[in-house]
Structures are given as C-alpha cells and as structure tokens.
Amino acid sequence: NLTYAGEMKNGMKWVESGTIETVRNISFYGRVAYSYNGKYMAQATIRRDGSSVFGDGHQWGTFPSLSLAWNITEEDFMKNQNLFSNLKLRAGYGISGNAMGFGAYTAVPTYGSTGDVKDGYVMLNATKLANPDLKWESTGMLNIGLDFAFLKGRINGTIEFYNKKTKDLIWDYPVSSYIYPFSSIAANVGEITNKGVEFTINIDAIRTKDFNWMTTLNLSHNKNVVDKLSNDLYKTSTFSQGDPMVAGVSANGWTQRIMEGEPLGTFYTYEWAGYNAEGISEYYTRDENGNRNGGTTTDPEYKDRTITGCAQPKLNLGWNNTINYKNWDFSCFFTGVFGHDVYNGLRAHYTAPDFFAGGKNVMKEFVTERPASDTGSNIPSDKFIEKGDYIRLQSLTVGYTFNDVFNGWIKSLQLYATMNNVFTITGYKGLDPEVNLGGIDPGVDYRWSTYPHTRTTMIGAKINF
Image (cartoon, rainbow, N blue to C red; front, top):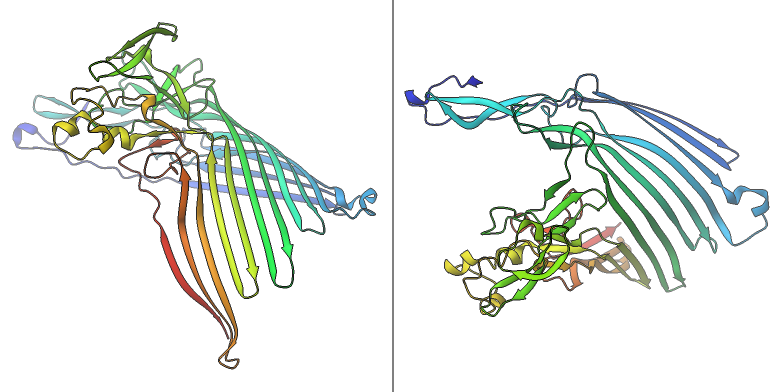
C-alpha cells in the first residue's frame, strides 16, 4: 500500500481528495447509397470509433450497417391502382457501439483512502481493479418496416418490427479478495435482448371549407429479457437494484433483481399477507425451492422473497390532434403507458416507524392503521407495488386568428393559450405515475430524487405584418 504525504499523528485531521479525468473520443464515418429507378434502394455505412475509456488494444471498434428498401408503388403492376400512393418495404441490420457513461479510469486501477490508518498514516488502498480486456459494448439490431399511404395520402403511416441484441455489457463483478486487492472488477459479460413493434398512423380525418381535423396515433410494444450475466471468468447469479432509500430500511432495501431469463425491472420482494391479531405486518413464507409453504411471519428471511411484479410496460401511447374551425385552432397531445408496475418508494418512506416515534409527518391513512411497534411495515414488499398505468393530457392549445387588423397594417394576429400537464388519469397513489422506465432499475419511484411534473400555462401572440 501507498501512504498520503502527511501524518495523522502530526495534526492532519482529514484528507482532501478529488478526481480529475479526461476522456477522448474520435470517430470516422463512411456511407454509400444506391438507388435503381426509385424502386430498389440500398445503403451501407461503417463507423470506426475510438475511446480512451477501454483497455489497451480494445479502444477501437468497427460498427457496420446495411439497409435495403423496395418501393412497391413504383412497380409496373402498381401503376393502374388508385388505392396506395406509397408502399415501401424496408429492412436493415446494423451494429452500434457504446462508450457513454464510463469514466477515464474504468479499465485502469485506482487507489484511494478506504478508511485504513496505520501508525498514524492514512493508507492508500486499491479502490478499483484494472481490466485491460475491457472493450466496447455493442448492439446489433435487425428491423423490418413497411411505409404506407393511401386515399391520396390522407391516411399514411408506418409499422416496424425490431430485434435488438446488446452484448458485452459492462458491470462490476465480484472477485476473490484472497487473489485480488479489491472485491470487484469491471468486465464485459452481460447480454440483453429487446424485441418489439412500433406503429404510427397519420389521418387527415376531416377536410372541409371551415373545419379540418388531423390526428396522429403512435403505439409501441417492447419485450425485454436478460439473456446472460456470467461467463467462464466472471460469474454471478443476480444483481440487486432499485433501493428507494426508505427510512428505517438500511439493509437489503433493494426492490428489484436482475437475473437471467427475466426482464430488467423485475420486482423481487416479500409478499405482504396483511396484519395479524396484534396489528403487526405479516409476510408469506417460502421453502428452499421458493414455493409458498402455507405459513406467514413477521420477520421474513431472504428466501421468502419472490417475483412480485415488472416495471416493463406492455404498451406506450402517443395521440396528437389538430383541429381548425374557421379562425379557431385547437391542438391536444395525449401520452399513456400501460401494463407495468411501479414501486411507490414515497409511500414506503412516509410510513416508517421512526416517523411515528419522532413526531414527523406521515400519511394520514397509516396513522390508525397499525401500531407504532410494527417495525417491519415498510420493508420491500408488494404492499407498495402498484399498477402504474396512466393517460395524460400532456398539452392543450387554443388560439384565434384575426386577419387584416388595423386596416391591413397587420396581416394576421393570432392570440393563443397553452397549458402543459393538464390532467392525468391513473390509479397510482404516488405523486406522479410518470416515473423513470429506463436504465437498469426502471419503475422505482425514488422519494429523494423524483420531482412531479409541474403544470404550466402560457399566453402568447403571433403577429405577421
């Protein structure tokens, strides 16, 4: 071990420390495109990317892609039809690399204070192990799509299917402390698959002299699964994630587990069984195989945890409408997410036994629900897992246009008002159902970092001279 240039015994009370780092990235890009009579199209690209965050010999990555398209409406057999104005079939496959989110010292060893003091000296110990084999994360994606338009373009849209495989995901893996000076190492091991479909349709629904209505609907579905967490060198069965930092739950506060064969955002908690005769929370118990054994307990063990929900939504929705009636114009945009669960960390936190004893603010529904001695009431359980479905009127705009104002000095004057976050329809009991659904721990309503969406109103004018 190394030592700081200073002695605790000579009056040094603390050690100031920090990090200075520089990350360098460089990219080269090439593209070739070909089109034959507007019927058949092909495009090939290649990227050569370099990043300083990876190990020696692995700092460069090559990422190609190829896409093909067939414009069916340009074929001779489509010339005499009047239904489709556009019909194009597309297919493509490409590989992309990821170096975002990794620091300059990801692949090299680092040293720092771990709190050890010897003979009055603050010791510098290993805080991260080197991995010279660390390389780019890569994602290969196959997509097949169909663009369409008919009724002279009044109805148009696209449908696309995709299959995305991400490999060599970087994670900190546990290693033997008998062999290595630190307990974990960053390594390329994980694999995740995303499959889904996206559908968009634009409809020019009504078109008259005084009234027009255009609407756009977007729907998407994605299925996520963790394929691999271990290899021959680095092994783990699971990773624990999603700790909402609930008061009084200092150990094992995580709510999710990353494991092979399951999606990211899988809730892995205790199952709440209600209250016993004394008003104390009980939880279902399980045998060594993970099956319910018919019992309950007020002090559950690790083996009593099980899959209790999933944060991956089954459907995402976006719906936009634009309506014009004479000089009036109106637009609204709805968003929605359906078929997923959310862990209400806020409710779990504000039912903490410490809050009752300390006279702090708590949710009123829990004041008389249970005795203050129910110390296990807010441990991670499905008691706080709720359906996160919602539909929200994201924005609403109403305007009126005056023409030839002030004897033609102003060609047009539009007055309008816009409101964002107008209303939300949901059964979720938290502050806002729109929680983060990305990353490695989606669907956790963190009480310490989540701020609900605000409602804003704007009034404005557009003037054309």
